[in-house]
Length: 309
Length: 280
Image (tube, rainbow over all chains, first blue to last red; front, side, top):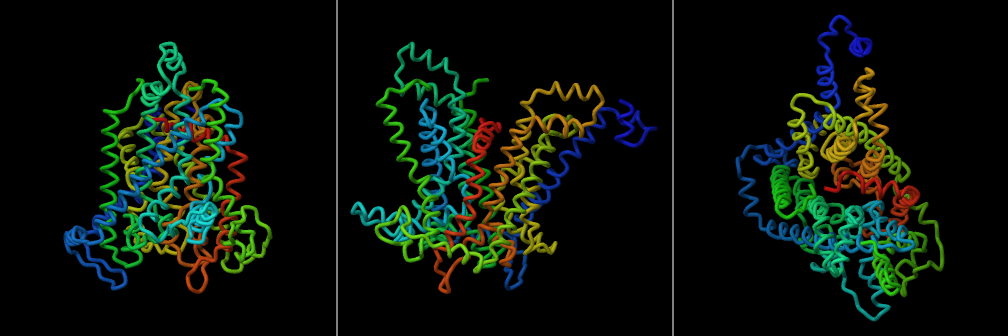
């Protein structure tokens, strides 16, 4: 032990000082240092700066940087585009979470069956997750063109498809659907793991009692996998607020502002219109929404989720 | 609910799964097949599910219109650096938070966890200013530093910590009694045991970096520095219209290698994901 202490610290005379505890403390700090310094530098300081910037009138092109108190927040409340942006964000996030969770659960239940070749299906359902996001979005953009693959297939069966990306309702639906098929495989796998973790005795007991299959699902399966449902819904909803590339490639926020979600609006204001101060204010809004949603879901966890321990 | 299904139910399940599979598989098929069709055939009606004529010249156009080889290299080396860096530093931090007792450990863990709450998009404006101040705009530094040390790495640290907490520690304690230092224990005992979690972290970090889009378009302006996602959207004609065949060829070259790796290693992908302590 002493030999090790000497060789690692190089201070043989102070070996009484370098107790196991002290060495552990030093090791602990050294181990977390890169992550901690990184979070402070690239998350916490920027978060403080975002708030500071939001109190300024700052136009990069005009090179103005002037303290103006809460004027940006006033502008935010009076921004005629904001209700539309928040509406689009809410529709997108809600649509995404509901469709994603429902499809993921359906696929997980199907994949949980004892069938030959099920692993091949699992691999195929998961495959869009590993396809480059922008590549996936470009193909869908190509498919959703007025003369693209989807309308051509519809025309084969005598249906005249809409110009998907040019109508506001169909554009929003398209963006949601493209994103769901891209990433639903992640939640599907998490649900599948949760389903496979439900003790089989529970089902056997229920069967002996003559409980019908749908009741086994609502009374056993759903409560047992509720922690996974909650966790994946948090990840999915926070992830949905970060969707940017899909919007940028598919619709550029259009038609009109119908698919301009908050992150896209933030990008436009800050980096296309060069209004950094106002962009920072929108960042604060995004931060508050994410924080409130996360907090609300952790609260719900206490009341709605069943835990074994 | 692993009961044996009746033959009729089997048909229903297979049929349902096959129909559901279409939107998952068809886009990739359509991307690959359209990219090898001559331009006149890509909007042909009725649509050609299997190309009748093949024209591979589009693939060389990709490299003529953009420094695509260079852009490919940019994406690949950035993703490799980010993945290796994240795996190392998140394993270290996750290990320390799970195993080592030191003052303020819990408080510091809470500080790190704040990163989970703050999407990178929130801090993009000040990050731009910081990197401008460090003269790192239009370089790859922001695309490496922020993911390895900033918000995206926090999730990796969280996953690693959960994994190490669940790992039995008898082996490590025996090594400590033998006088092994913390770093040796971490490197030679804990890290090899953490392979499943490291694999999952590595896969997701790689995909995250490979897909990054907002950050490159904010930080980079020279085509030879672009990453793949950014490059894919640059294949437009003089009127800003998409050059579909070239775009699809570039998209195919971006997507297919990762897909092949996935098919070979799909068990690691899927099982790694299922065992990352994400089960709530």
